[in-house]
Length: 277
Image (cartoon, rainbow, N blue to C red; front, side, top):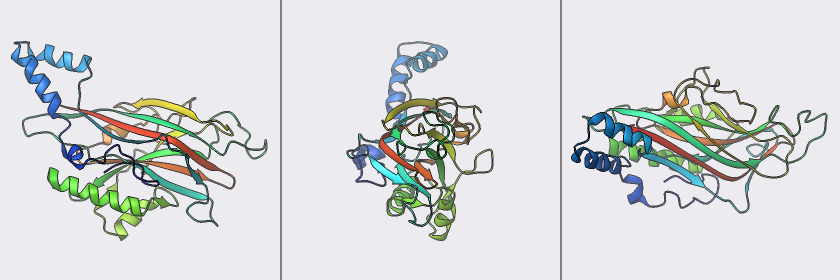
């Protein structure tokens, strides 16, 4: 489960036994040990937070050799607009009945570039992140059966992974919503605050031939709007972390649009950190 959806699957989550383990169990064990020492609850929770000892899940691939290339007309040779699913996280685990659950952050690592060239007319912002038509975006997929238990959620996520592995290419990420419904996969895209279904993760630097590596985090609370990037091309992920729920799956997409544009990926990784108390 997990891994690159458009290339041979990576080894990040090939072990089914590891995939089904509860990532929160080590956290519970360490917290119980601290309580056993007689420490007050507030101090134990502070220690856990300061040590960042929290359950986490994720997916990653790379370094890819050769890098994966997505030209803008990859989906349809006659239409310069393509989206390719490249990563799928495991479903976010829930908590036990006597616990509180909270999402802490989502961390991204991406190493990529665009086609590496562009004329002054075609690419007036060469060397910057402005006007980039080679980028990465994320979506949240949620099972439509909200009463699913933990085991059923895992089975549903495996079904989703198989479907995405067979259908990694779409014209746009928004098109995935209709395809999921038409194929009755049992999943839907979660809307963002702007009414869309994606969050901009990272723009590639315009007309830069070498690969650039970006590492950054999204935190709870509204930062940049879902489609906006900062001066370094990072999306702020406004509302993304707040929208995540147990059972959700995070998918990273490569995007390229307009003639001449292409997206080249060497490595990508997502880490989802949450807490149960």
